[in-house]
Length: 69
Image (tube, rainbow, N blue to C red; front, side, top):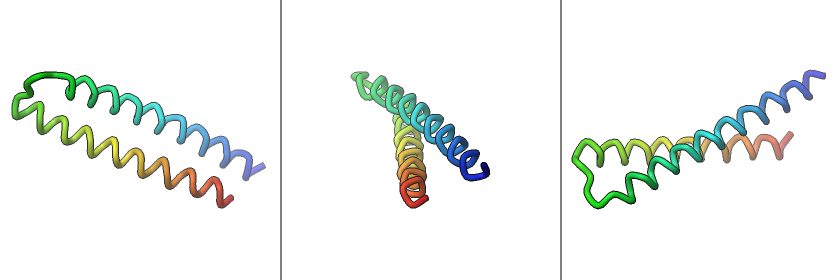
């Protein structure tokens, strides 16, 4: 029963991270589509890209753990 609960929690977390990754990707695409970005927008875009990469790293780690279980 404990293992099933852990799998459900992992699935929930993967779903949450996938949604977060998609939202970050959409924000990045929106900013990348603009002709001109202010300095603040450029900094924000770089932050979004870092957060997207960190989210992707978390997803990959979780998927590897699921395969190992």
